[in-house]
Length: 120
Length: 384
Image 1 (tube, each protein chain N blue to C red):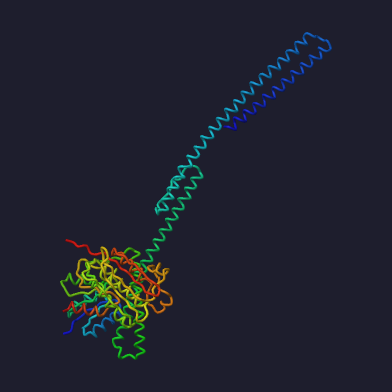
Image 2: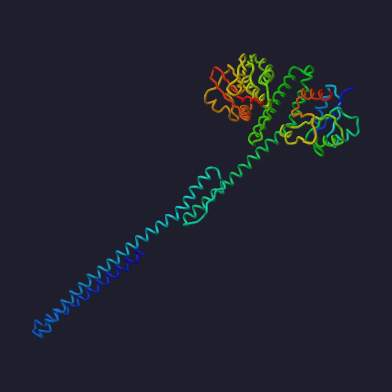
């Protein structure tokens, strides 16, 4: 069974790009437009093997969604996508563990190897 | 006071002279009348007595006026001395009352020039020094206001660059991502279409590089350019960027070689940042050198540290160009830059980054022979 990736970004274009590239690599992709939809998708199931969340999204940010999941005892690996280093430095949560950070523009080779590592 | 005494003295002197002359004239008239009477033989004894009395009277008047003139001269002299003393006292008082505010102004100007924009002086003393003090305070307040405005503008500029960089990143991610997607299916494109997509990708990467450089520069200006150093092996530090650059240098038939002195001490560096510096130096060498040029990277021990050098046998630079090479938006010769894709920010950022590590970035170049950039980094101190 192929690896299931849940991706969340408030930009439809970025979601389309991520979905296309990930599907070309053989991943099963679920999308969400913000943190609220991430929680809904997790609750609806089936559970993803890894989450790829944009750090800044309206309604609920990727960081907040991650915090909520960890509080609920869900330990799925999470990669946070952020625009740049400063954002990661400023917004890096200290109370929850992030599996890794990916910066924009996305280096897809790096992304695929991180996903492979974390879902092995 | 002086004038008062002189006026009183002179007036009194003139009055005394007038009185003396009037009295003398009256005395002569009485004497002449007596002499006429004597000549006509009328009452000769009394007339003679009158003549002698009048001569004595005039002598007494002369004695008197002499004494009074002396008194007046003394009075005027005393007045003069008193006046001069008073004037001297007044003048020294005047000097003292001007000197303190002036000294304070000189001292305050020094502090203001040294950058203490809170400097103000106490306004007091004579009206002239008081207005000078007021003008000084007004100037200091204006300088402070302008400095405040400038700082605010600087902050706004930094914030703008950070925000712009953030906002531009998402669309750039899409452009680059979809262009890459097209290139993945290159065999489905015509050669012309493939070239077009290649151009889109090249320019997108250039924009991303420009954005990253601007962001680093804004961070540096805001004092937010930071490094996360960790003990690092020099060989891997050099090999990695060289490997990254190989395909580009090969495409231009340039030779890229490396030489790493064995048993070099470790360095404490932010690997990504030193990699960024080396890639920048290698990219410059690659872009400014013609085809078939040689680029060489060396790592050697130097004093308490390690020296990484990037040398080439390219066009080199003249002394006047070298002077400004680490300044922002400085780029090589216009004839060359037409096909060189740099931002003019790379070396300015590289210098900041090397200095953040406690190191130095230097350059030597000879026109027509080539250039060599030296990155010196302090060695990691052995800890027990």
